[in-house]
Image (cartoon, rainbow, N blue to C red; front, side, top):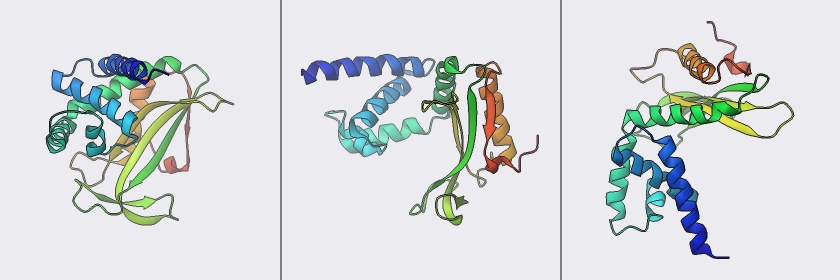
Length: 198
């Protein structure tokens, strides 16, 4: 097997895919998305230093990490990626597809200085109260299928000044996904949504 040819082919596909995802962003943001996708696949990690190591750059790892950090704070990157992924994925949603909304948490047990770190109820540890963030995600799936299509993901904190309520977060997901899939699909929400009132 020619690994060099395979690596070049993979880089080409990543470049093409990242170009679709990052359409409308500035040049530095587009470069970051391309490098991040490649680095995550190559390193099997989301740690900036691990991603940076895969780039085989003459620039120091510290400088690469600083550059990545500057890109990550751009709010337009997340909204662009969310919109692009939803647009691409919505083509797979049919009239009877299940749209599964899941409210969950992201535990940050050892974090101390992360922005707007809040108290969450850890769903995997008998409801223990821990530091972390709330998450809201929507996936699509067909009945009797093991395949899933990610449609929407948001991470939020009740300590953020922009936070209004969990209901508002749920409505955002309904509105964005519903519009993108042209109201196809059947919504499913677990008992985490019992408190939802429209």
